[in-house]
Length: 368
Image 1 (tube, rainbow, N blue to C red):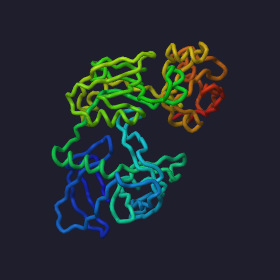
Image 2: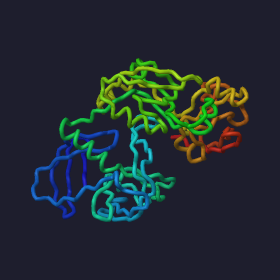
Image 3: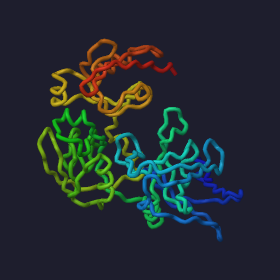
Image 4: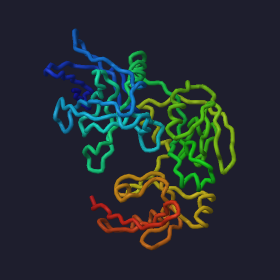
């Protein structure tokens, strides 16, 4: 059990028998929410580490944590899937990890606890759950122990993590998006945004580009790109192949070093952040090709859906065609219409999903 006092930075480590130690942070990785903490103590009990590359779907696992404050709770399940791309940073960022998915019951408070195989070896660190209720729904994710070991090794040697960095926001290419871009498949990583003065901008990458190869490695899914970029040495000049407006284009991009947590805070003013509206949508104007796929209709592409919008069933790749029977003309016009709706009123969004259209009702939140 680890307790932290944010104001003073003090760390208290409490063992199962109640013994407490003062700890110091050797280093931490905000992307994966991992840290190495040091205490002055000897003859401490230890547990063995397994090999997360050798686990298989169907393997039985045990999770230990403090769900809802109930310390040392053990739950069981199986490994449901491997290499599940889970974002560990802001939506669409480069902070991805290929997580172990399990159906072991994990709730708030389990995060940071170990995931064991039946040999008593740690194969993962519980990190996230997917839930509509806030509690366990059998969709839990753990950082593979091999990734955690790699992170801890770097933290112990230098106190920080060095990763390659481009400075882009990416998203998965759905079938609908592929059709709108005139693509034959869903391979690649779609660039949703480019940070100002970043390696990506300097290298000529643009929003709307689909990266299909990076440094000679094919990019099949969007989660392939952060792994490839993160593994690249900062300063390396990498060949990048992109699909831009139906044409393959080759670029050379010099990989940067992933900013530290302090540097990210200091450089926030230079980041082109996606604007999340009051119902949890990140919207983007359609490209000419996308409008053509909609027979010339105006609309707004859903780049991300959170909060009320996600709860209502809106998802990435949907296109918003109208708000309360008014056709969408532009992002600015839509935002003005949305802002004019009173709190606790219900709006109806006309959504295009594939070849189908549907109205989705959303009740706005109460005024704060």
